[in-house]
Length: 326
Image 1 (cartoon, rainbow, N blue to C red):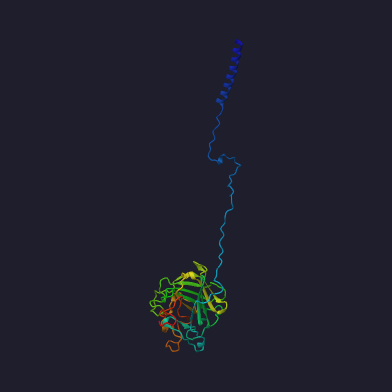
Image 2 (image 1 turned 90 degrees about the horizontal axis):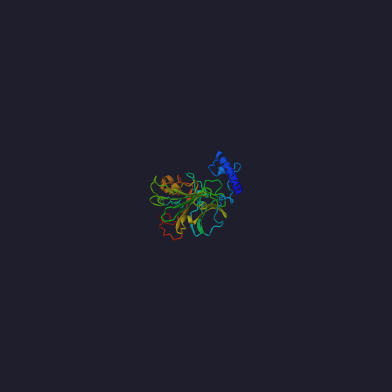
């Protein structure tokens, strides 16, 4: 019995010695510091690089659209409205003209000033026409002669939408050199403050510094809200005919209006409409041999038609109307 107790005591002594030794080592050991985490990147090994994840799809790039002009059809429609103009060819040798009415803003002056030299490509032919096909309005201006290349000839179409004798829209361009539809030099203007024609449309008024004619440009050689709004060319079947084409939507698809055309030997000044409001008859001169103001002076190298109707029968009292008295 004593032997068993002695053996148990020995075991306890050994265990106590082991425990005491471990406790001593623990007491004398230097504590291991707890790491402080400043960022997730700081925990990574130095050789690991932070990589941006690869895109899961190819980025979409936006290409700049290519502008492709959309000119009118090559073939113009049959005319829906026509009017006649005086042709001066037969009177050229006599250096005079008939049909000029300065007081009604109708000019028959395809002559130079003073010398009265005749210019055939400024003499508007007998039958002028306008027609509408789909979204396009076509105007054809026949001339007595073919405009030479590089000349200073300009042609215009004037529209009076509210039929009051005042032009509302003006389309003009230098003589085109090709039978292909083009836009070089082509301008469109409107009268934003309703002063074309002054106090009395078509009739002469006292010159006014306040009147500015067609004052707002809405199209300039392809620049505007619609780059394809208007075009000009020589008629492919007759190089002595100038053709304009413009989108009907420009004038809100209006189907009742007055219209006229103009040929000029110098650049058309949209602010000078109408000419008889800016020059007196004495200053302008006259192509009529019976006039005391013969020959032509300040207002030369110009031919214009009277006004005619599209889409309605005129009363004959509209200012500047063909065959009218006012």
